[in-house]
Image (spheres, rainbow, N blue to C red):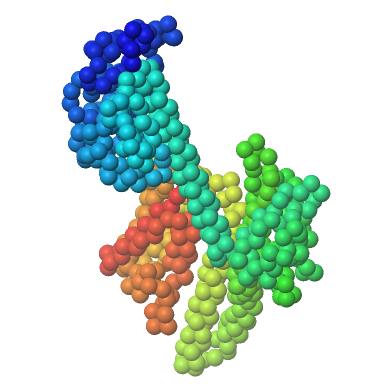
Amino acid sequence: MDSGSGEAADSVAPENAPDEAFAAEAADAPHGGPPEPDGAAQILLFMRPGRDRDLLTEALSDRFRVEATTDVETLESRFDCCVFDTQEFNRVAGTIQRRRKLSASAFLPFVLLASDESLGPATETAWNYVDDVIELPVRKRALRSRIANLVERRRTSLRLAARERKLAETVEDLRLKERAMDEAPVGITIAEAGEDGDDPLVYVNEGFETLTGYGSAMLGEDCRFLQGEGTDPETTAAIREAIADERPISVDVLNYRKNGQTFWNRLTVAPIRDGEDEVTHFVGFQTDITDRKIRERRLEVMNRVLNHNLRNKMNLITGYTELLRSDLDDENALESLEVIGETTDDLMRIAEAARKIEYTLSDVSQVEDGIDLREQLLVLSSRMRDRFPEATLTLSLPDDDPIETRVVGLVTAIEEGVENAVKHNDDPRPSVDVRVSRQSSGWIAIEIADDGPGIPDHETQVLERGETSLTHADRLGIWLIYWVVNKAGGKFTVDTSSEGTTLRLTVPANP
């Protein structure tokens, strides 16, 4: 290019061009000053050391980070654009395609700088490897612009690749969640929030079809098709009210399968809100609890039998035993009656213990608002002293701490532990210590220590191993304590020896 044209002052020329061709960027100043620097873009100058490389580095370094090298391994590193001269391009052209494969998900530009002397038929072949061929000499501003355009294409490509990866991850995440819902062992339904009281189904999983017999054919229908003659109208009204109020609800409801078979359904319904906090759908979870309901009913019947029928029969036996005892003088007969009387008393105690367990574990109303454990234990201590005046009961409580708790049956469990410690101690003056401490703001520790003969091993081993026909507990009280603690998600341990027993109950204050 003719230096007299005025372009030499802001051009990049091949090595045999005059030095003035690489002068400062004076010509760019009228057009808004030098280009804005871009430290994030890495330009790799794959060129031999020399004046051309130095001047190209100078021309590009005010806008890009520039690294000059002839090390082939550098092509494996991270960069945003690679610029070759013809000699180095001819040496490593075969490496370019392999390098492109490493970044196949994003555009990676390669540029060839070629002088008049190096241009020719080989240039056509070069286009198979590079994205631009820049003929020298070239204005620095044009050089930077062309490089910048390629870098911007790469950046756009990287952003698109990142979005594609994110989209792919999102799609895979959605597919995973959909598979989890499809394969869940419970019924899952999604219904669109309707305006006229109907909430048409838009999704049912395989678990729902297995449970009810109804599949995708019911999409578009409200889930009321599960209701039938035996369904409690108060329960369904509560469900509709919760949906109308856009709040979650969990109920036990009698539903009907497609074949007409009834089943007890533990139904949980919750609203789904969009980004503007508007309810758009409702998700429902259905679990077959028929076996649990049958078990509950069975326990109700057994509790009635123990509490009413058995008690009446035992009272009848006790009454006739007393009549016979007053009419008999035979010592052997009187001993037999004594055995009958003791056995009757034992059966009465068992029935009462079973009734107490059922009542204690089911009566959640006693702790709906929490209880003041300190006050309850002070009352318990006074009651125990009245019942067992010969016993010494010591109560240790934290200072100035009401120890509020919502553990169902905790006071009853402590009372059971104290009562058993006194009753099973042969000492005429038994001693029991009840120690309460707060391990942290959320946990309460209770120790009930006595100086009795200790609890037999088979009574405590069943807590860990379970009961069998050969190994079982005679004292239901220890099971009551165990169940109270475990229902609260706590820990119950027993340390026992011939010198006494310590029961340790650790429970969360608000399970």
